[in-house]
Length: 225
Image 1 (cartoon, one colour):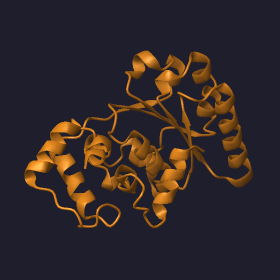
Image 2: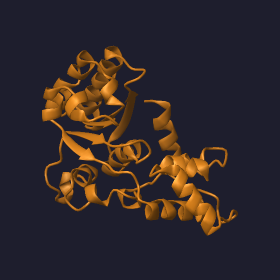
Image 3: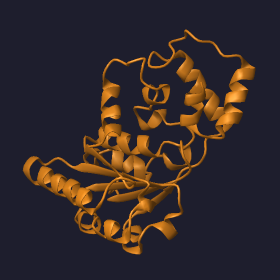
């Protein structure tokens, strides 16, 4: 599990004000996610993954590819799915991980499933950077449902993901956040106990300028703030 997973795990603990605002303000549930209502409706793939089948949901997909620009919540969505569904969250970066790393995580997930009955969400960021052999290594575990596979990419998966993996996946297109969504995010961050706790004020002009500079990117919005 990577450092990013540790950052998420710490969201259950009292907030450390030294942590970046964007980390402290990560949504904890799908209902808190802004700007992606078009992919979070009842019965949507992400909702079905987040809610166990025992609660009457339709069969959930075993693989999802989150496609969209930076700062729209791809990693956050993967973590929320794992947390809400009671799965273990494992993360790899396609920039720093090789086939050996992939197989180690898949083996760990398989043993966990067999020995403990615990399912795993494997999240791979920037999956478009994986080579064909790295993507091939994922196929058996996705096919056998040893893991729930969630990948994130800023590149069109039709051109960056191998066809066998793409055919086994549901592609979810995420959008840049609208200005009103970013304003809501700023308001939350200014007043939320995890954020600035009402101790900082922002004029309408300042909020408008932050929104303009952020260009639909939630993470950038909070970084500027």
